[in-house]
Image (cartoon, rainbow, N blue to C red; front, side):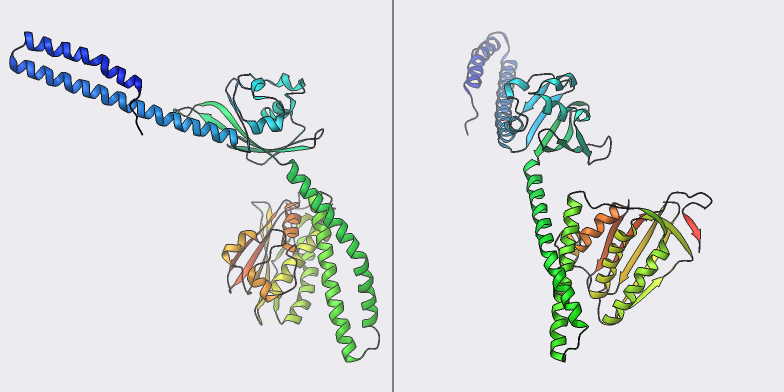
Length: 432
């Protein structure tokens, strides 16, 4: 690439007469040794000047290329980008932003935005994104004051849903000189998710009615007099229908969760009494699989505010998995640890089972996911139980975490907040 521009050549030509004049003066008025020294110094200075100018031209050329590349990226990227300075004067507004907000680049770039412009229909959505407190629905996904700030914004009148990431523009000293927003349109994605959820709900409802009828018929047959072969056929069919009904009910639960219709009825209950009933059923299942089930019961009980029916689903699922994915003659231990200082209680379910591959742990609570070794151990399963379980626990103000070692066992920890102080009782804890 030739970095020597016409302007650089002109500068070099302009300096040549000055160089010649300086050398002539040195020859006429200075002794020979000083004349030679002066000529050398002038040539050195001339070389330094030409080198500096050449370097500056190269840097400017590279910067111009980079600037052009950045401009091209900003213009072509499908994410809307809006940048503005500390006075809210818009500096960048790319075509993707025009597509989302409707206002043209000519109408926005260079304009100073303020909250009063929300009354202008052509700018309303843009103003509500820049000043998010004006938006109809804002869901904050990052900590207050932390950057980048992340929010989801919904607009009821247009059914538009946006994901907005805001970060600061800093100068060389770290001072804030403006802000930049990256806006992603989630409208189509949410519409597709809604359509998928509605389809699953309709399909599950349509399947549940005939499956329930078949289930009743098979239950009736099991109570009748059958030959050994007939009983085997009925048992196989009954198990298959029961498993199908469980899958259908799980699909309905997922659709309710995603539609925000998975209602809760909370009441304050003693946790150990609540767990006793669930673990008794786990004992029976454990006997079928020859797995020992232990309850490491603490000395004191505690109260938690829960939807007992919903939270039972969580512990049934965790204990069922711990038993079915265990090794031969393995064991499952349930323990409870009360943290009064942190106002929470931990319920741990520890098994000696097949474990979970470490690279698949982060996918464990995803819909329809089953670990590779789990599929080989238990063929039937829909991969929805842990997704539903985590959603239920989080709606109780807690969480589920998991640790596992392949072929050594898995530990699920369910954390729940202790119930608020009740009149006449010590804080959230009662003696057994």
